[in-house]
Image (cartoon, rainbow, N blue to C red; front, side):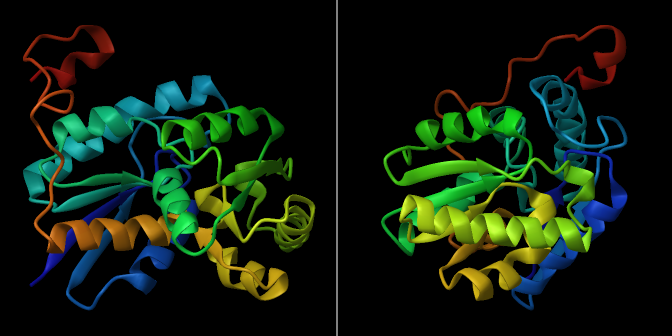
Length: 243
């Protein structure tokens, strides 16, 4: 059976999208086709509530395109999980955010985890999601490396992230580390070697989770909140979103 998974990087940084795609394809089963995309509109990186809000229309456009193309499931590859609820209203198959997937996975390999994220201003959002997903008690701490998203591939940045992960494990007494940005995905194995604990990258965790849900024939329930949105017209720049 061949499954089609679309990994949506909500920002428009194509180099980051390519890296995310490589990480996702590396863990996908042989019969799964993974396509990584960036929207044609939106911010270059997502580092604020403003960025996140402006990223959502592009994410939804990619989900709508995926529905026309027969995609089986979707990964939203930004740790804020932007547009996750709205995407579930549009998609026939499952939609999983990388923060959601990573936190779930962390609780399956230990009783506690630490999150290492990018800028300090995103710490509150990570805590908000931990509470929303029911993992606040397991989350021992959220730590910011204060490195912008687009600088994470720099070797010096990777070293800083690795050192912060090791420090977080010792400081929090946690059993694992959750990497709090899709741009950290390629650092996962390196950080795990250095810290000696399980390190969870949400891109790969979400890819495998979507793949599993699809193979089990499980879709988002449309009984209530995630039913398709009622038809209506949208105006101005959102005119193409009329359905």
